[in-house]
Image (cartoon, rainbow, N blue to C red; front, side, top):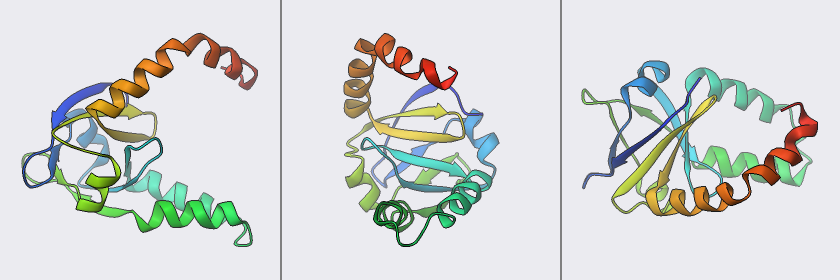
Length: 143
């Protein structure tokens, strides 16, 4: 399970150092793709295969199923870690996530999310103000 928050930076070659705690679970390679809310999702291969199978089960005739599959898979790239624990982020994903220099890497259960610091701070501030309201809405889900 991925948990925690770490601050890092994007270097001039579009590389980001992934925290060792996360690398240990990601093994030697992972899938990086466009995420929701202008972040990137980084999946271990095992979780990517589970997600892929679930999306494969959706009806091809469903417009939203096709759209989400296209969104997720067309933006996906397999990444491997260099000897310093860095991954290279393709330009199209740097643009998608609005990365400048500072990034925030967070653990979210079965995946890692990579955010621009500005977008993360804005998102976190917005959600913090509504945390009790959100928790109440989710209470019917057994949380």
